[in-house]
Length: 335
Image 1: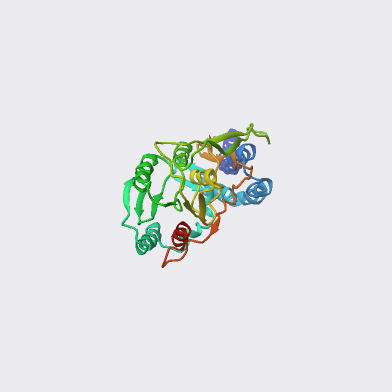
Image 2: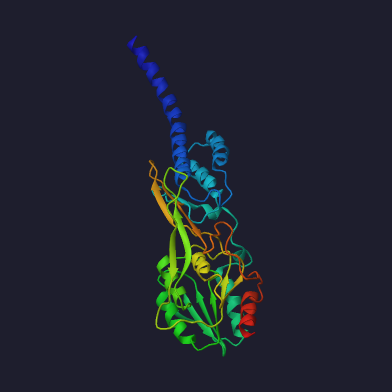
């Protein structure tokens, strides 16, 4: 009898092991979905029915065998949000995904083989309009000018204030300024506010933010953010701010901060529309979930998340022979 019991036990060991694996997958899936359900701030803004998404992807769990496959399924579920501030990381297995990376690449990059190819066209267009060769003022900050107009290319909104300040010093006597943030993926609030402060002569509310309360469909009181004059002088002459659907995060908010200013004309296409801060939680299996937990509103309480901030003058940056956005910016400043 003892032998029989042992034999039966040994037979059931693999059966139990196999039955535990789907349960672990279900637990991880549920934990991830629930964390987002209780903490994510932008379901409505991004037009996503999260309960419906759960039903769609939960059905696919039965076809999942490995943890890597589960990770991929969870990434696909997060991709429904198309949110560059939402990502999943598995450090142990060196895996990561971003909710936005599953969607189509920004239109500005689709037409070109690389960022370098895009900038080559821009540089040539500047040269054709009597601008000098670009000078690198600091990491991610480039400067050029012709007789009337200054041009500053700002490719990051973090650690770039002093490079921008040096560039602005060189063109402060020009009649106008082109500020190009089309390939600026963001940075931090401190940098964006200091740079914006070099372009205004008064203190004003630039935007509002609220944070979702965990586990509740409620938010903190709105907090206002201000732009105020910064530095030894402010450039108050006409400015054309060049944007695209790659202009994101802190650069999105920078655009929001300057939108509607009398001397600023936004030229290009709508920004990416990704303006939340990033919160982070660790799942029980060690995965790290990053997600948006805030809402950012304009001064007049418009939520541009998922839609992008519209330009004043719409022109796409997809011409591979001439940079039509720079051409239009020059025209506007020469009028």
